[in-house]
Amino acid sequence: MITIRIAGNRYYPNTFVFPGGEVSVKLPEIIPIREVQECQVKAKITNSNDLMELLLAKNALDVKYGPIRYVLLIPYLPYARQDRVCNDGEALSIKVMVLE
Picture 1 (cartoon, rainbow, N blue to C red):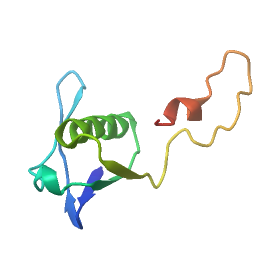
Picture 2: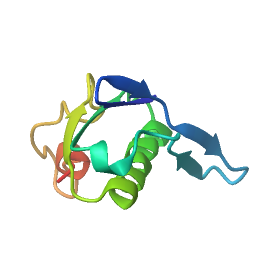
Picture 3: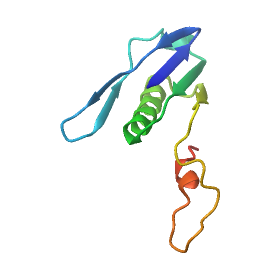
Picture 4: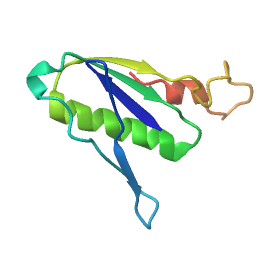
């Protein structure tokens, strides 16, 4: 679940999952663009669809508002507990999950 906070108001993107499993995110009508300087995004990620919702919401915000300051709150980040590669050929999951 994604919560967007702008100027003290909370908004919730509309999400939809297509029959093929693809996630879609549409921003609700939010305050006028000229008033947006900072956006707080809170994401409760429990599965891969939640992660995709976050990425799509970020993209939708970028398209709509351009370069503004984002504050991202993720109370629990899946795959963050792996701190090193233990076996040859193993992925480092946290490196994949870090959003830059």
